[in-house]
Image 1 (spheres, rainbow over the protein chains, first blue to last red):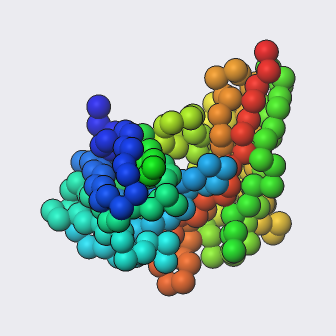
Image 2: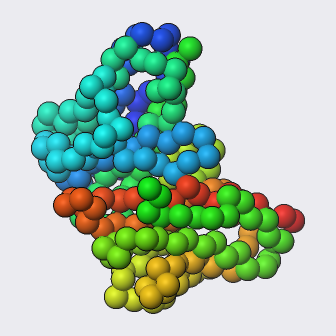
Length: 112
Length: 114
């Protein structure tokens, strides 16, 4: 399977715990994006990398959120001190150029 | 500030008929538009796109129309099939606050009835 893969698919955590999600983009894609989607809404932009450089961060990304793409390949998104409002589907996408972005299956986070 | 709007949260169409999903945008800097399809518990799947220099793009049963003067695009699916039942997102790419962004609408849930 050469598509975008995300791990885990589902995560249930207690409020206050830290969580980390991983995204493996399509191998030749140099752009990688993180989005968040809540029920009834379209995906909301969180952050974007070109190779290993984080070029853009949404104001939705509070200080508790951090994303890395250390070698310009896979990326991680960490949420510290999770809150119930963090419950959402976290989507990763990659693209070669800023045209079609291909999405992974997403990680469904539930904070209890 | 919703820059890409899908004003119909849901649409129900008879199998075999045409489904028309609509999308409006406000930012004239958008220059590339995409439609994604999403099943529950999965990520969005790219369907079809159109550049702002075109007014129509067709791929099999799917056709996207762009009316730049009205800042409106639509996705036509004909004939509609039960497997088309999903949430459809319109998205636009352009320069927003100095950086290129991919901005999504809220989605329209399409239900195809047998």
